[in-house]
Image (cartoon, rainbow, N blue to C red; front, side, top):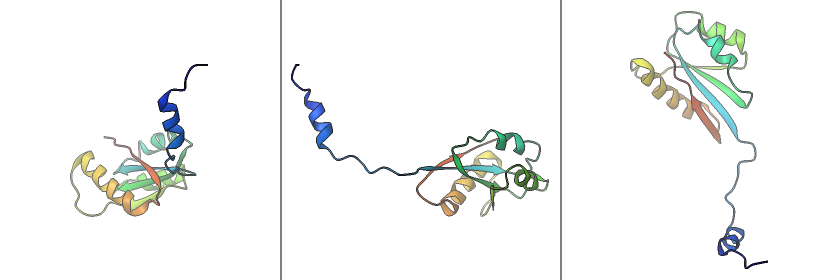
Length: 114
């Protein structure tokens, strides 16, 4: 056998970074009057998602009832603060709510729809 590559020795001697024992994924979905679409969206959620948070932008239809009927484990958080128009405003609020609501360590995902 030939000589060992110098980088092979370095990789063995360096300490490995700490790992998360059981990483979890939280899915944040900003919603406002999405009763027609929410069931389809929730049916697409992967099994690896540990928690679903709906950030509700003051829905006036049956979005929340429909979501809870489809997924009883869904958490609903009302949108707070300034209400910027459009999807970008919902995503900003969703990110803020996730910071308050999620329990670290988490991998966070947000879904935007129109």
